[in-house]
Image (tube, rainbow, N blue to C red; front, side, top):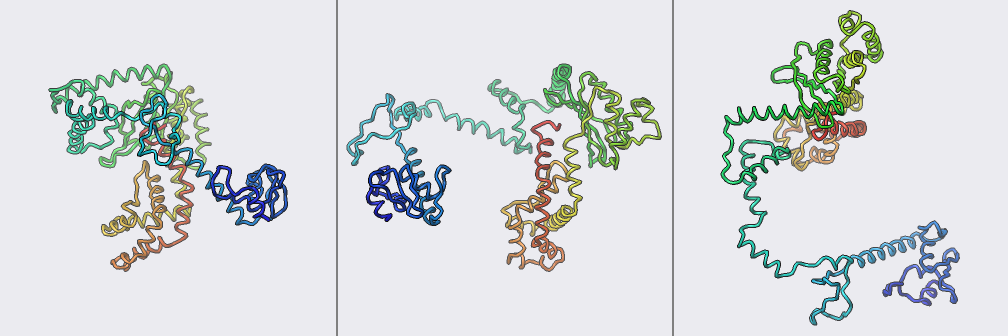
Length: 496
């Protein structure tokens, strides 16, 4: 029945090709109406030609009822045919030959040897009349210019940049130094000076040029202070510890829409836990910048001093500071000033126009620290630290690990200590299959490590399913936090 319907109305497709449309095999058309087809499976009649019949068989259109008895292989055949025809139409639309030197949009005469069997016009795109190939005489002229005016600009630039790169290599300057705006300014100044520039001496860099740069910095600071008066600013306090000289230092910076400016630093090694002294430092900083210019003060929230009920205590502290006065409040034995949040509350109490804001990066780091205390996360971190330490202490084992991980390391430094732990955890997760291959390989068994207790424990952890489940659980919890931490504590944006 289906063969009759297909042969009676031609076996060619609508595009004129010799390939038979498979949809005609599964329906019959009325002799007096070729747009009406009958499905051979459910006997349903459809209007709209063979295309609507195919939609009925496949069931990919909401305007046609799907055939309930159509076999699955028929649907697959029709879908494959539709995809094939769509690809052919797309290829035909994109395949055109550009016309050379067709400025006026006229046809180019074809040489007899290129005519072949076709006399049709060459297919062109809509922009071909505006885009032409470069004439051969102009190309030859560009080649001749090389011998008249010397090497091209690309070769000249490479020759000029080679000594600059060599100076970077000799002085051990980090490559990212070229991203500084001052580096571009330096190269432009040298180019504007021209030939015969005498480079600055060591004395000039240490004394006169340095003093001049200090004056320029003070001048630049004046423009920032004008910005503070016009649009307001934020005072940022950044505390850190110099592990080399064992000193605690706090830096004070001011941020405004014009940018961040370093103001001063103060050593607080002896009073690092004295909230009274830290409050006075911040208060002096507000006075120096100008209270009317300051919108908020940003500090660490000193989580190591925050205990249960800190919000309740700080609320009471604010009330007492407002009624007793700040000096009497700080000297009172009834008040515990060890809470970092209380310093900010004291600032707000003394200066009601200001806001205290904890550092976003520090808050995120504390959140990562608290997540690391969960039992599954803590277990995964503990095992990762052991495996990373065991591998890194053995040079030959490090080389084997890099061979299996395609020269990747398991430990990746990050902006904070806890972020480093979770980024290392993600590296273990990425290299999971490679680590399993390493501990089960013949190369591993030939070495002396399998006999050691530490290596046995390492192999047990890597082949343990619960360990990898805990790693995946930890990464799901911390992934978004680490991403935000990189944003707020990166070099591209202010750490606000």
